[in-house]
Image (cartoon, rainbow, N blue to C red; front, side, top):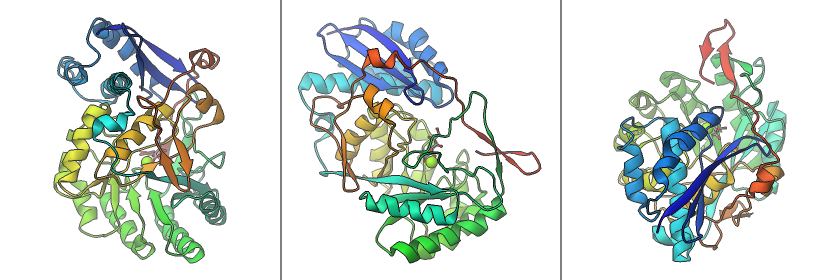
Length: 402
Ligand code: GCO
Ligand code: MG
């Protein structure tokens, strides 16, 4: 069996997506997501110029050898561009493998460990009151777990506040929007928000919060401690994680569960965090961390230390990633939760899929493969639009972590 052709499809049905489609001599095709928000064309070129010529003529069933070939064989290892490209190839090959077997992808991983996948949605508002109402709307929609982000008094354009109600789309301009950050204002405000959420909705709903890399380890420890009474499911990306040992400072001072990993791309980025039990949830995804092949290694390693999964699932990860992630989540023994930011109707139409939401959970479909396809004709109607993520600056102009 041979790969006969492959192509990169760049489209923008509401936002930009990069998709790899692989064709074989047996008529079976597979697709993988290669979207890297704000840097899409670099992965498109990596695939088209440097990866696709290597795929033609190779046996698509040897996904492990292909992974090693693209990782070791490139000589230049790791990094978001390389690893997103490898992810797309790997996801497409697992899609093909499962279609050849005539099985949904989760069956090839080891079958079902659960019937349904717990997801969390994104509630947000410009003010504390609006955010409290937004959480109520998510509860009414059936969500059992909700991430709450709010505008902060005195901070213009705080992280995580949407223009729409169902999803948050940060890559909003061809050149980065400038936002302002003020840690003291944030640290004073956030405990008040979660106090009100628990007063209003009681103990039942799981509540999550994303710090989005803004704090120092000591500030993160202070926040974690002040949130302990409100029993968060997790506090996410509390501090940048290039220095994995930074989490030791947070860990030693608070019992608020910690989640990290959406920007990681290999097991090496989270090795110390996991083996020292400095985190509770690892958030690497099929898309960013080398596809099913490598994510499975990360999850198995995490299981040794009772660290559970919590895959990133923002709108910049296409429905292809969501489909593959749901098969992974259905199998992975140490599953924690799955992020679920809904896609726009235009996006859903370009990527027909068989997963569905019901009562706070997502269910992967039963069709062979990962269950997501691409309507190329429709995709062609939405050409690429340059869009970058915002940046953050302190009030004195210092560039901060967005
Ligand atoms: C999340 C994320 C996203 C990212 C986005 C960047 O937890 O969902 O932090 O909202 O900011 O994916 O492209
Ligand atoms: Mg995040």
